[in-house]
Image (tube, rainbow, N blue to C red; front, side, top):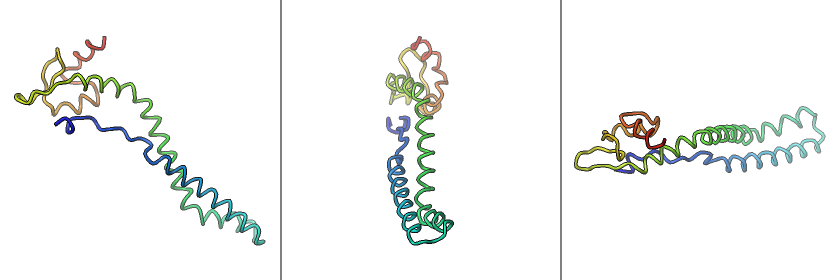
Length: 135
């Protein structure tokens, strides 16, 4: 039951390190292709655009993944104090199997179906209990 009611675990920037590695590999391949193309005496346009065509499939997705991962990480950093406060409340909650209710000591009981909204917004029938306890 606790696993069903628990808030989701954060996994931000999960693929960020992999995206950085792919970007570095793509840049190295791009540099090698550029050197090889310019050494063969091809035109400047070909020596610039051919490596982009050959390594763009690595560079474009890796760059996009790094940008998205950085944005997610910054959003989670901003959201961290609220999540820590919610975890403190979550750790003080109790569940009564007999009555199928959850409660914070000193607060009214509530249905477990109300819990996801509470964890997400700190609102509900027991928001005043949380405010009093935190004060």
